[in-house]
Image 1 (cartoon, rainbow, N blue to C red):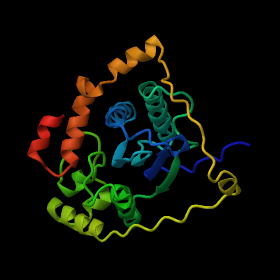
Image 2 (cartoon, rainbow, N blue to C red):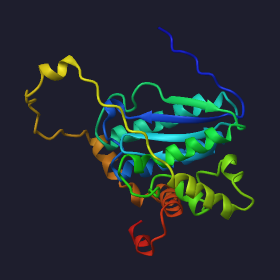
Image 3 (cartoon, one colour):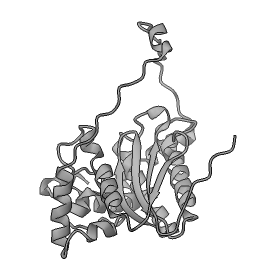
Length: 254
């Protein structure tokens, strides 16, 4: 069965979601998120698209992207998913599909400012909705660029945000208030499958032995101390500092 063709239009912004295979928390490690930011920088340099929103969670990622041409969107996502999957599989010593199925994509025109603002807030509100944060500030989300009017080197403000006021300060104040009124919808209860009853109480034995890496993988693990990599560290530091609530004591951690 062939895949359904995506409807792509010029000038549209696209809310993109990619999820780890089996919903595993493979992005929980900080090193993976560092590499992710670097991969996004490489894709921006390669395709010149506009990235309006970004939130890297533990097992999925949200983007709000406006490609230079509609045909670029599949190329952007193919590059990002391929590049990160190759890196993460080696970093985490795993094989097989890293990302689950196709990426989710939903587009809307530049005139739909209400949809744009709701999408921005939904993406930025993910860490709070997941009860990972009390506020909207999160190291691997670009909410801070909207709230503090900072520049992180990867993202930019959506035109809908710039229409909120006559000055940037007014735009930031109104968007901050808009986010504070956000009430995440409760997630539906998990469906009960027949297998749940069949396997209730059954203990699955696990192999406690350590899996040995090949020499090549060991070398890659040594190279994956990415905080010490100048290229990755430069992208990481600029993004995180621009998007978190300012804290002088944190400067020595990166």
